[in-house]
Length: 320
Image (cartoon, rainbow, N blue to C red):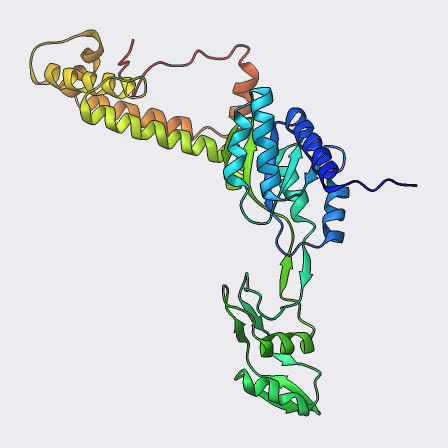
């Protein structure tokens, strides 16, 4: 015979369970549970079993348990969960990959009919085509200004019609029509609103970032730092290469305009004094391009050691 627990005992057991989960898990997904049925929630629990635990409860009870746990253990990080406990939400404690857990939760969405008074989460469009309804049902379509025609003894919708817009409440006529057409326009499930990870709270959109996205954002940040450093003439690690190159260009320009010279400018000045040397480089490049694949293959066979990489820049040996 099972012993029925009192409300006080149930609260005590809930407090122990929540405190144990806070000690055991450092990652929590806060998910909205609007319009989620008990069977659907049970299926989600089964799908996450092994590495995640779904905990539902009253917000006031969860807040009290978290506050008491923080005072007892000194764990102030868990207090960051308190502002997130608003509305019909649940906690998903997990040790797995946060993105994978969120994707697993999203698999358990189920279709739902449009009930009267419900706020539409999406736009509802009735597609054109044969409805299978007899002509006596045309009154539903007339009330909603849906153009129809009678085709082979049934009502046919001529053009697609936006029946309900996102954010609007579902009326009785719209709900009745969608029920007659067998359309279940909405789908509901646990929707992750926020992510708690070792005391940090962030939006679930962060989980969608890839390594390429992070590299792109980092490169954009470095580019901004470089631009700002160059504009202010303030040396930074990012701007240093550009500053050296710009300084070299300035010194090179002075050397070309005057008799002053230095090793990295001598070859440039030599080419400028005798422009015909520029023409020498073009035939060499053309001859290299004219090498046939067969000759190139033979040349590769003859090479036993890789050639040393050239440090020359445009043939001027600027940094020798």
